[in-house]
Length: 251
Image (cartoon, rainbow, N blue to C red; front, side):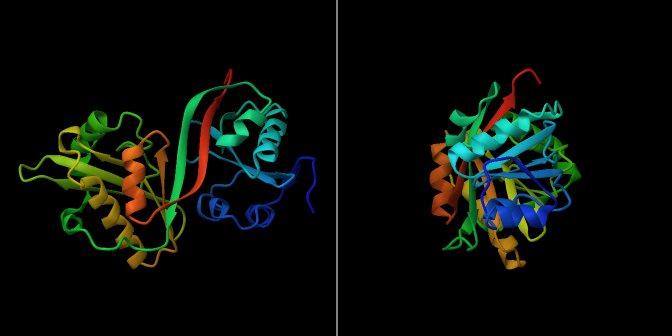
């Protein structure tokens, strides 16, 4: 039964139930990282601190109810919440001052890219000896990257080197939920764009994850990156939700 008042949820199972077992709550949260959770109207919200940037409040549901839930949670005065992530349309319904941030899309797939790309065979798992090259690649190609080589939440880095040994493309993989890898920091060296290297890395990691038994593979993309959007859609990814991340003003 939906209620217009903010209701705290006791655990991750209750969050899943209140959120209708939505893929976002199934694949981007887990009992291990969930801190608090709430419901209000048709919306659910929860806090995590896994990805840096301090404690983050997520909201999911219809625009009005998600915005109302976030407003209600922030109105409780918890200064530890430094940013919010909500459906893009919910921003207009958040009645709390927010600061700068980015709009981004959450993609997912449960099918391996078809057909197989010849360049997938060049993708390798990166190790400690590659971290300096990886940092340089991300500095050149992706200054807004959601992960860097020293990010402890990344479980593995993948990359492609050209004939001279230069690292020219990369991707990071982590898992908040066991069996559902999330790809981050997918990047291609500016001098090597247009050759399909980003698609090669994404396809190879996606294929390997699904072959290893993953239920799905997810990734995030800044909403203004139309080139990447076309790439992911060609590989079979679909948008599950358009999100906005914003800092909480004054925190």
